[in-house]
Structures are given as structure tokens and as C-alpha cells.
Image 1 (cartoon, one colour):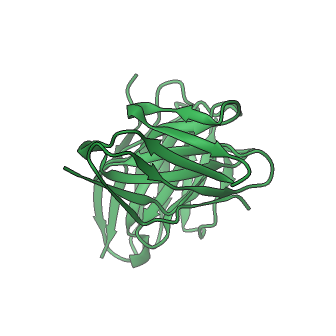
Image 2 (cartoon, chains in turn orange, green):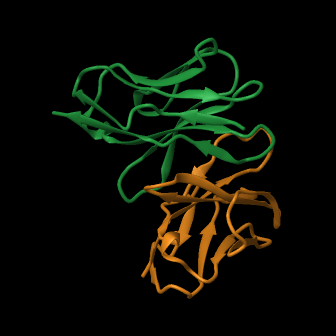
Image 3 (cartoon, one colour):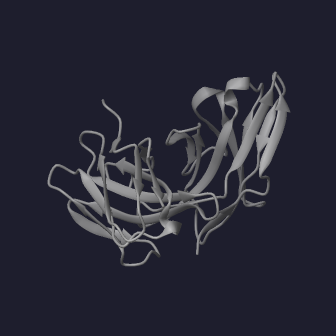
Length: 114
Length: 113
């Protein structure tokens, strides 16, 4: 099976702009989770989508949003970008059932905000 | 709230020597614990998990981890380190109800030839 793919891999944006990141999960997986990785805060959970519904949300401002499509692909949007949003954004997929313990991560999108 | 702690920012070990990367956890109830590894410019790769059962868990690439309930620890181990094991290692605990993982701060492992 193909792994989790994320596009684009690298992105440079200016403060105040918005950005959309994409994640395609492993075929058959219905859960997609997003994480932000920064040197200062480490890995932090953003949100999880399952069958097109947001099932869980972390402690991030409303500027961070996401959605999931019927084919399980997910997008994450950040509006009004701030310098502090510079990070590696990782998505992870799983089949989403209670007993599915492993999450499989994509290579990430590195966002730089200038 | 569930949390994990990785007390060492970096671990240095010579190739061929055993390695240990430490992790302690704080959870209510039984923990679901994981180790992931991250190589430069890559995502996280799953190494192993503890859900229930034997306290010694074997995983990928010759790694294993020992779950110790009394010490609330889940240390990652390998009998003989390789230079290629040099990477960033994360311990994580999963929320019991959701897919959310709570990660430790990470430990950089440096294996010298």
C-alpha cells in the first residue's frame, strides 16, 4: 500500500496570508489527524477527522481549521498567518477504530512564514 | 491529563553498545504507549507499542521497550546500537477515547562509529 502523502512538502508564505495543506491517507484509512511540530513546543495535536467529521480538537486558535472529503483526503487551513505558525505540519492516518492503535505519518509539510 | 516525559535531550552511545532511551508516563487508567522515530526531513515512523500483555515489547529494527507499571516507565532499548540508529525518538501516549497522541519532547540519539 502507498503511504501517507502530504502536499506540498515545502511552503513559504507571508504574514497575514492563508495557506492550505493537503494530506492523503493510506488507502482504506478513514481517520486523519494533524500535528504541528516546532522546536519550542514539540509535537502538538491539532485535530482529527473521521468520516468527514471532526472528532477531536486540540488547543489551537480558530485560525486553524480542517476538513475531510468523502475519499478521506484531508486539508488543513491556516488563516491570517503569524510568524509563530512556522512549523512542520504532520498528518497521520489510521483506520479510526477504537482498536487501531498505530498511526502512520506522512513526511510533513514545512511551512515558513516570513 | 495524560502526559509522557523524556528526561534526556540527547543520548550518546558507541556503535555496538546497548542503548536506552528513557520515557515515563502519567495517565489515569491503563496506558497505551508508543515509540516513534524521526529521521531528518522525514515524518514519524512507528517503532512499537504497548497496549496490554507482556511487559517486554519487541518492535521494528531490533528495538524493544520494557513497560514497568510500578515505575510508570516505558524505556526504549536496543542490545547493539548502529550508526544508522542516530535519529530523534519520541515516546507517546494515546488518549483512550480518541486517536490523539500526546508526545514527549523527544530524545536525540547519537551513535558514534
